[in-house]
Image (cartoon, rainbow, N blue to C red):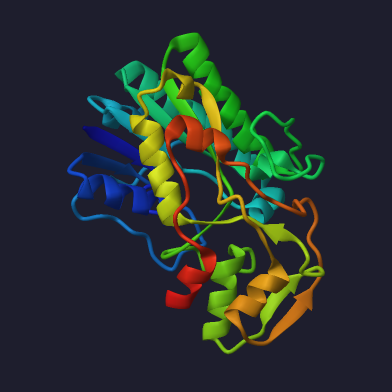
Length: 297
């Protein structure tokens, strides 16, 4: 099979690229290296590489020809930068996603897997969070990613492009972003520990997160692309462990000094996935435990 991965030089995308290549598939990567969260980008030397922007429809269109699967990860993927620059988040996450879908449709791609976010659940839903709960978008990041969900579903219902939507919970693992004050919390804490700095806990530290290892996210993407059950098409699936930890618990697991900083606006208090739908339809279940990975990191 031939796969195209947008955002394939970033954290999650590069792991998907590596797995596809290890499975013997041909892989095309599109990434514009726009993220400032990484010290480096991860271009697999065995993939076909294109440093281009998904917002440029004409530039990306030729690389979708003869592609079987598209994994769409390219995005403004962090909450606080999207709050600071909502116009950029909208351009990338909405217009860029529509461009990718249109290219996939025109090229006759067999299936597109879209990476979305548990931030869609916001504050008003009581965990564990189910896919059929109402959305509660608190910021430009979740609004634009949910607009992408709607486009993905529409391209299936209206145009017949096979699509599957995955809502990731808090993803961690090798290559996770480490730079800047808005890096995901595990990466931020690891960077602070390496610099002999206290780990900075936002607010009271009682907020809880469902930490999901990148290897499990990769497995969910492969399961979504290869699922033969038509019940997966046009559908949305949680990709989370079904267990959460408070930030204070995370600090205790990692060990070391910490300090409290001011609470941030427009972020969910508790995330916890109900992953029963993914287990039932995609035949996917998480394998990595947080304590196990941190003990070997």
